[in-house]
Image (tube, rainbow, N blue to C red; front, side):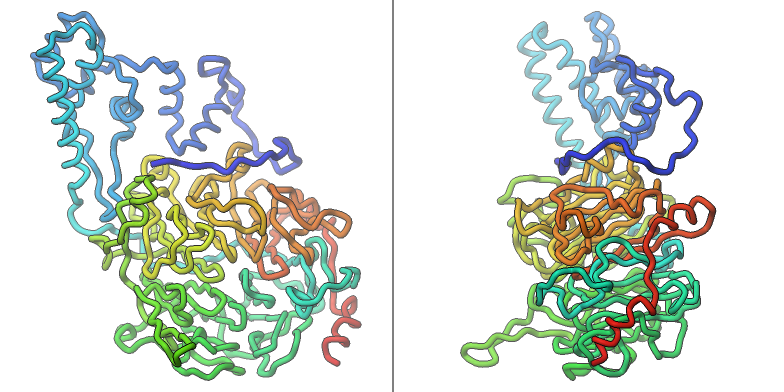
Length: 637
């Protein structure tokens, strides 16, 4: 397996919230002047225990003499080594990790969550190591024996890798709704959705927010905190939910996607949604919106040309909120939805039991049902078998390339269903414009690292399979597995219009695809090393039409990409684009608990719980209803 990184140049130092360090953090503990801080940093980057990294550094690259208690060798082999006078030395990473007791030789099978057993071929492996050590002094018979030993070791290793665990993985269920720490709502990017992607004008009006600005905190939200924020890379409108479960919407409303019961070019300010219930999560597409209440029921409104509202009708626009319909075969025991995500013209839902449901456009395989259903309407017109109600998707596939091979020809081979496909449960979902990223539910007791699946439109390498090809069924990303991820498992998915991101337990971000109109695409998930190497632990991340944002636990927020209407948050006097991660100055020292990128705007949740939070928030601009009276009047005329 090859682990890639995306390298950016970025300042190392930055004013940010600091945590108390151990008194021995600067103590030299490794050769070459390495301190405990250095060991901690390297351990986090590698996803390994601190004591394992210390052992690796202290051996100074020469390998170690394997303790006899950790060897699996015969008495005759031990005698042979004693006679030769040569110590048993291992310079191989996997052997070293095995001998040190850190499970470094344990491998995960790409398909069925299988593991190799290090002890299965220990005897053959140790013999092979001994023969390598004595190379050049052995007889021709010994050389032949070495070849045979290599063959035996390879055979045993292959057999161990193919050994399947008894039964399916055990998951930590039920899946819960994603709930960031509640905070104050802020937005950057113009409130005038009529100009986004359409009309160019100087961004000098009061509604043109060029940097993060606190939105109507007193005049509309009555100082209530916001529990959830929703927008998407295809959406010029947004929905937020307060801690009381009340939903508000604003932005583009040409087909009623704001759920106000009517259409208009733009809803200028957050407007309360008149729908009974206490809501916990939401999602928005280009022209439609989804709300989920605390009972797991789902409601939809807005454009439905492709069936993306999932209300079992082909009506092109739904002006009033309607309850979504599930296929009768999937709804026998009742379904509780806890997460929702929308692409441009499709919707994906996730139940508390970890099952996927989708509805809407199937042109690029977005539904994950294994087909597009393409057919001819007329001799010159093609249509697709779109889904008008939500149907369960339970097939997950892999190809030979997903076992870690990097050969392009391997990546193009046909996929086959995983042996545990029917048992796989999902824990996190996120949709881009025409693709979806899904992360497997966490295993009980963390016995396995979560696998990552993608499907839909594969342009720009957005699916992470090293090729530009559409996938009609959720397919395993082979490069996001292996030893590096066993102690740093993927936990959350994010997506922009043409990019995908994976957040791991240690706060590392892996990126693939492309979010700028220039430059090359990243074909496999690659670590954004400028964040990881500078000890930034990412907590929030999102992608927009041409933007990417990351917020950290230490009060640092960075963005990069193209933001023509101020969605990068750099300020009116600064550049509207950046090719590398750049600090959002106005959010310095603010703890951003969540960030979501839309089309032409970005939303933030800013924590407001202690005096340090309040001091950081004071420097952020605020805007209230009275400040926007002229804009509201213009949108109403």
